[in-house]
Image (cartoon, rainbow, N blue to C red; front, side, top):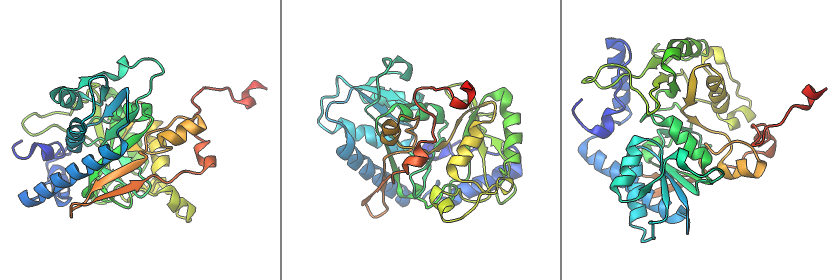
Length: 338
């Protein structure tokens, strides 16, 4: 596919010609194919957000730093290089092939996730997002790196998200059209059938589908794990925990879900490796409560159209909610010991 390579990865046709045309048109309407002047403004906004995020959060003497995937992270690495720090003793942990090449090309030291010493934490992870809501829940996976992105985010003491103003929305699935899901290829049809039962269908009637490659290379996209990506649309933006507190209700049969409930429901489908919803406790919240977490960033830096940078910080979840998450150390239910 010719054109802007930063845009091409989003233009994945659905399994029919009519569906492909419709889906392509929707993505173009979301400004993923901006004019040249707008494109320059977007790149400037990414650069400004990355520079401020690195200036505010890069630790004094980190041992390991996570580097995410996507176009905004290019500017994060650039800001790190320009920080004037001694980077020679820092291991930079990539979230996939693209980010590893970015680290190498910048003259930094890459270290694979599975080469981290047992018990060692990543001091900080920087990554982008496809969409971010008011509670800093994120959709990720537009670049098909969601599994390794989630590994790195959950191993990090602090996760910082960096994005441009287009990604800032009140609710997820406001403009980004689908939830990316990494799926074992043999289970893809089974997973899509379950998703349809969960109400996965766009307002235009498009159900879940396997993400296809660009036109010049037909066939499903394969992730770094050699898995498929299933894109699951839903008819309405996802509810937040605040919406539930205000009395709004879920209706799974109609595809109306709260972010964390949907993430857990999809995770429970046999054949799913990872869901592109990054939600739950932040890293510091999870550590304080000794539970599994860290997917949700502690802060998001958005480069705005006017050149400013807007910072959103995660609201702390109530202790009673955080306590519901799986403990770091497995335990046996008291009910099963009697």
